[in-house]
Image (cartoon, rainbow, N blue to C red; front, side, top):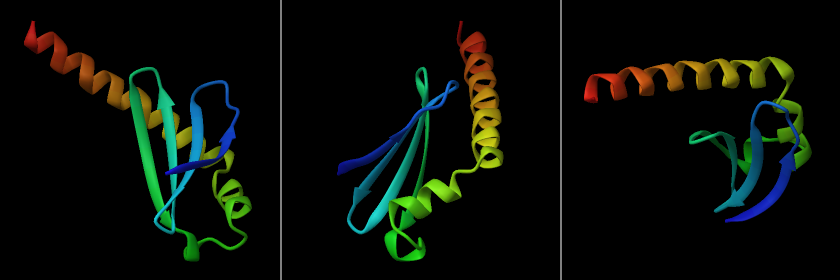
Length: 81
């Protein structure tokens, strides 16, 4: 797996990888991460096409998902204690 790009964002780390003819888009926020896999043949323009896919609306939805993931984890952790 090789890193092909990193996108700066104030709320999360965004890294794009290439592996086995797929793009892997990984979002990280603290200990949480989300990843999305796309066939390279499904994206027009290579990595530049991935940049177009990652519009502000998509990234905002990813950030909302992080909030939900964090709450789910903390709720489970509280039940564990």
